[in-house]
Length: 70
Image 1: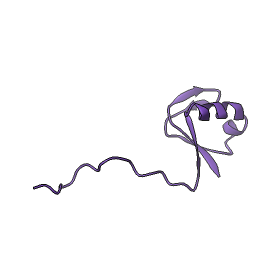
Image 2 (image 1 turned 90 degrees about the horizontal axis):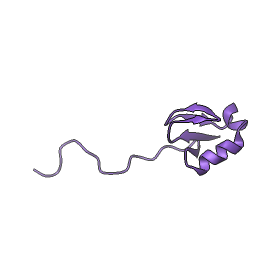
Image 3 (image 1 turned 90 degrees about the vertical axis):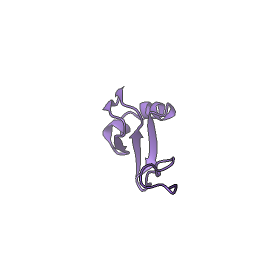
Image 4 (image 1 turned 120 degrees about the vertical axis):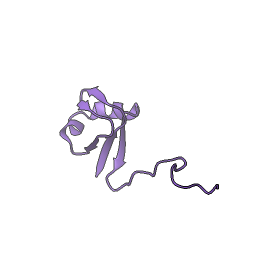
């Protein structure tokens, strides 16, 4: 099932959405406001993703621990 992840906290036609919140595709706010959802996706405030997808590992070098240098 498709779901949407909020990239920034927003308030508007869909109500109050916090950054990192995940909305299922059958949420009434999504179903009843498809025009606003398309606009938010285009502005990259909502990111469409599949429920089966796993988030990518954080990018960058791991920090901490004992390094190879002595």
